[in-house]
Amino acid sequence: MGERKLVSRRVAFVSGLLCILLLGVTVGTVVYYNNVYSNYVSTHSRTDTEYTSLASQLATASENISSLNSQLSALQNELASNGTQLTDMKAQIDALTSQLKSINASIATIEDYYNSLIYVYTTENHDLAVELTAANNQTTFLKSQIDILNAIANLTASTTWINNQTVSQPAGSSTIWSVSADYAGYVAIMVLSSTTSSTYANVTYSSHGVNYNVQTNIGTSGTAYFPVLPSSNIKVSVGNGLSTGIATETVTITYYY
Image 1 (tube, one colour):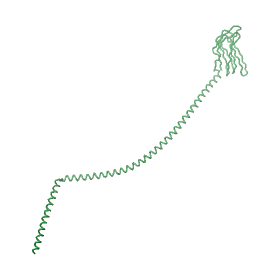
Image 2 (cartoon, rainbow, N blue to C red):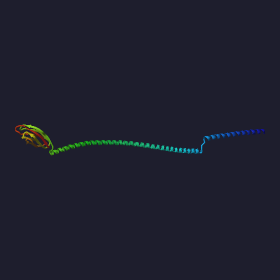
Image 3 (cartoon, rainbow, N blue to C red):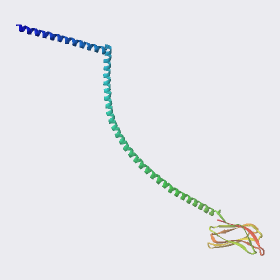
Image 4 (cartoon, helix red, strand yellow):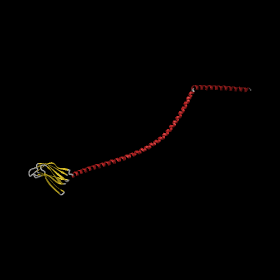
C-alpha cells in the first residue's frame, strides 16, 4: 500500500510537471506568434482601400497579360500569314522576272527586225534615188535633144563659123573656109565692111546627089543667104571681084539649122 501511494505521488508529480511544461510551451508559443504577428502587422500594415487598389491593379495586369497574349498570338498568325504571302510574292516576282526576260528577248528580236527593215528601206531608197537621178538626167538630156530637134525643125538653132574676121585678097581672088553641116539649113554670109563694091560671097558643096555652087554679089556691106544640105565638104568664101587692086573685108558667117 505504501509503495502504491508513492508511485501515485510520483505520477502526479510528473504529470503536474508535464502540464506546467506544456503550459509554458503553449504560453511561449502564443507570445512568440503574437510578437511575430505584431511585427508583421507593423511592417505590412495595409488599408482596405490599398488592398482594393492592389486587387484592381492585379486584375488590370491580368487583363494586360491576356491582351498581350492575344496580340502575340495575332502577331504570330500575321507573321505566319506574311510568310505565306512573302512566299507567294517571291513566286510572283520570279514569274514576272521570267516574263520580263521573255519580253526583253522579244524586244531584242523586234529591234533586230526593225533595223533590218531600216537597212532594206535605206538601201532601196538609195537605189531608187540613184535610179531617179539617172532618170532625171536622162529626162533632161532627152528634153535638151527635143529642144535641139525643135530648133532644127524651126531653123532657130545656129552656129557661128566665122566671127567678125578681117581678110584681104588680091584682084580676082577669094578667101575660102571649109566647113561641114549636120543638118539641112542655110548659111548667112555677112560682110560688115569692104573696101570694094565688087565683094561677093560663094557657097559650094555636094550632098545627096546635089552639086551646089552659087555666088552672090554683096558690095561694100550686106548679107547673102545660101541653102545647105548635110555635108562635110562645104566651101564658103568671100572674094574680090576687082580686076586690079587689093580688097579688104570684115566677115561674119553663121550656119542656121
